Amino acid sequence: MLARHRSTIGLYAIVAAATGVLIEPLLAVAYFDTVGGAEQLDVPTVAAWAVPARELFGGLVTWASADVVYNTYTLIMALMFPAVIAVALATRAQRPELRKRSERVGWRIALTGYGLFGAGVLLVAVMVISAAPDALVDAGFMALMIPGMLLSMIGSTILGIVFLRTGHQPRLTGWLLACSLPLLIVGSAVVGHNGFGILPLMIAWAATGSRWRAADNAPPIEPAGRPLTQHG
Image (cartoon, rainbow, N blue to C red; front, side, top):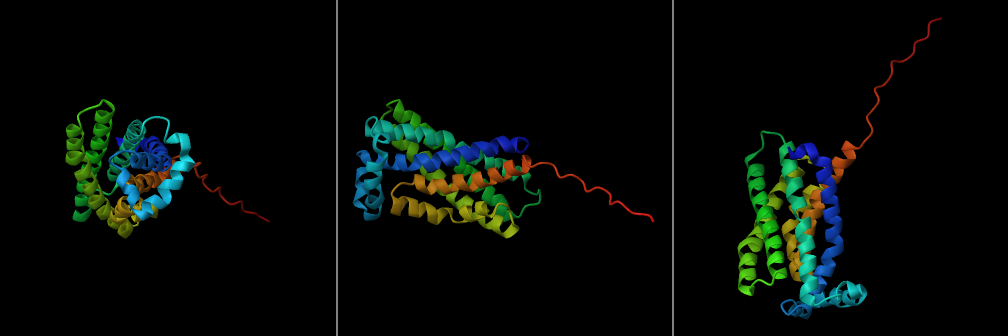
């Protein structure tokens, strides 16, 4: 059923990825302003970009308290992430029925991870905004977001390798999925916020969504007319 609405889903994925690219730097800088995230600025690679970025962003990260700004941007990202799940489900529906075992395993792991992470980030954002106890927020983070993120990376890596081997188009989707784990490590350890590691997933599936929209909106190809013959 999702495959029938792939053009709409593709648009959602494109908007989600674009929003993520714009919001994630603001989200990260807001996080570094919180009590729990301030220590990240002790990492040289994080401070190198985050300190000048905070000056550049100005009111975009100072319009309220650090916690409020961070929670608001987290909620926006939580509303965008389901695009990953939608495009992935629609892609699986369009894949050949006779898939190899590795692909079937990859889909199970990836979709489970996407679901857990999506539910976790939304639940945590809502709980924080509603001033839920910190212990409850931490429980949601540990029970859903962490395992969801790990499963997402493992499943995405498997799918990315399968896509590259089977010629899935666009190739960008396969490459970003296959490299999702090292990109997560770079985003978390070097850039300083795991949201940067999630962005490649959003961009990967948005690339597939963009291809759908291009194909669905392309003008129909006119059949070639019969050649004229001359008699003389």
